[in-house]
Length: 454
Image 1 (cartoon, one colour):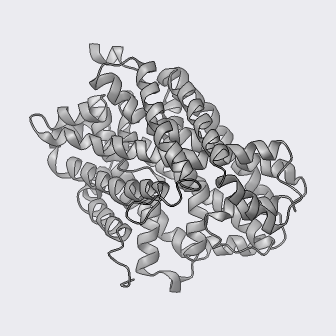
Image 2: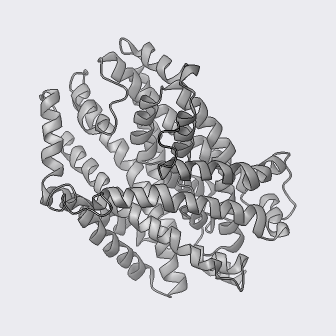
Image 3: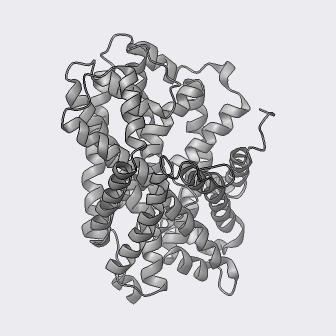
């Protein structure tokens, strides 16, 4: 107990929920989900997505929570405690490396968002044709200095928040930004539903075309649920290590998964009615955010305000995600290598800046430098998303479902017998069987082993 009294904790349950939801809610919900749903038939994709969140997402969240809250340590220290005398703690480097890789390339996209937010505030994102919006984006990412500058400035902001610690940094920022994120989403959704033709967008999202329920759509939806919730990265384990012992892990996991799913659905409600109202294509893909939507915003009454709010929304989602990814290595550096918080945060930032710069330059001066046929940006994205995260998800579900002492797991799920719920038995079943099988399918699909079969 003395160790716990010296270690940081989330001060309030609301702060813990806000921070952990913030770690899950990111560009995967607001940027990736709409274009994935658009490319996979809308309602059919959403239906499978929701099922996967509850059958795979929540069990893996709980698995990470059990290890994190049960030990109150960083991922390496936690694995040393639950698997003493084994080399399993070396697996912590999978999460640490994955988090640094994601932080590096993810911050490049976050830099684009900051650029577009500032340009929107300055009033420069209006009065252009669709072709000009495409040219604006291409010119921006092809500029080495602009792309690199915004990446580095975003990571510097990330550093300033993180160096203030858990209570004054992560919890305080998340407690402000997450409610604002939901408020902006709600405002967008209400307005989008008033547009002519909005009904078509709502039907596309919520009315499933069962002819679209193919194995490819199902695995794609499972993968989106997995990546949207940041599973297997160990950031949820890290945040859970700051939970208080009275918190209900099952309830927290359900709330976090539900709110994360709600954000994805609200993003769909926000985007698809607008897209259908203006005759754009729902399967526009990644360019939807930076090319298609800015063109649509300028045609809306008060387009300036909508453009600013949209990129502010993306900024909130991105910064709450990057601070959680950074915390994985920061707690490792402080607890395993006894660094100060400021020094550990600085080291994490310097590493991310170095690789983030290379990722930003892969769209211009390093565009011809490729490894395994991929630019550094694409390589970091592919390895972390398709290899390291699924492997991490399988590891944590197998550890909690099959390896760790059953009494330890039960004590964490029931808060040492003080909580009782009928859901625990089916939850453990999903941790042991459903989640690992589902993640293996996502893993194999991500490696392209199903190409030509689905």
